[in-house]
Image (tube, rainbow, N blue to C red; front, side, top):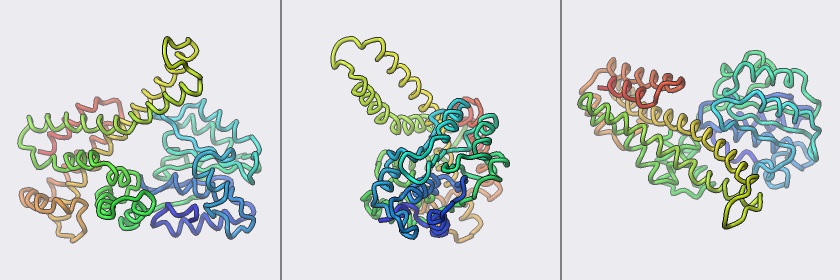
Length: 379
């Protein structure tokens, strides 16, 4: 199975990257763009594996079975660095450290590959630190930046990168991937792929977690029970609670495993007081986890609003009679009744209210206040 197997519906991208991996001298900087869940990071990692593949025949690079391919995909190859910030934005120091690492020669492969996930989380000052390294790269270093849109990075960066544009994969392809790779139930996989709108990561979680499916169903049904301001305020609090639960579920297990791994690595005693040096390391880990939790909650709030917007997207589809397939097909009867009680203009206004709430949450607005203002606008 090749390194490209986890990129459903991206045949054009696979062809482009396969040719580049077989080239003697591929471009030194690449910009991977595409909607959330389209597989930007997976495509970058697959490309890195193909570039470092042990196969001597260029046409066979990206085999997926050699040591280099397996270690790159597992995140343990010394010549492939995957960088993702746990904070809201990358810090300047993080980028300076990365630029310094880019100067190192490859330890065993042909290239040193550096992948930056969520490159849109770089501020202008941070991006300027990276710009010099991309303008004058070391001869064996290849940069890969991942971001939703080319407009999310400075034009000076964009102009120096080879573009790779991913599309939203077909839901059937995402479902097939979940069945093949994760062993998901075919019916659940199809449902998850459809309601997630082909977002691979979200679909995987929905297919595997019954609680996640229940939380999403609660979100999508919310407009059906809004009768007045009191209902709207109550619903806003529920949405924030759901977001907190989602964020906690995503981080709780990871936080505990990180703590256990750190204690083992530091040789911490099983009983009794911790030595000061170990306590300071644990405190630093907890601070990192708190920063990550803030970002996780922000992402969860945004996902809640995306799920909620699918209700009104379906309502508008029914009102306009477009014949387009509904995201929430299992709610067709309720959606039809709701659509008959309102107009397309009202539906568009409610969709705008959700979009405005997403923008407000990107600032320092308290989540409860943003959700309450939105929920009242849905009445």
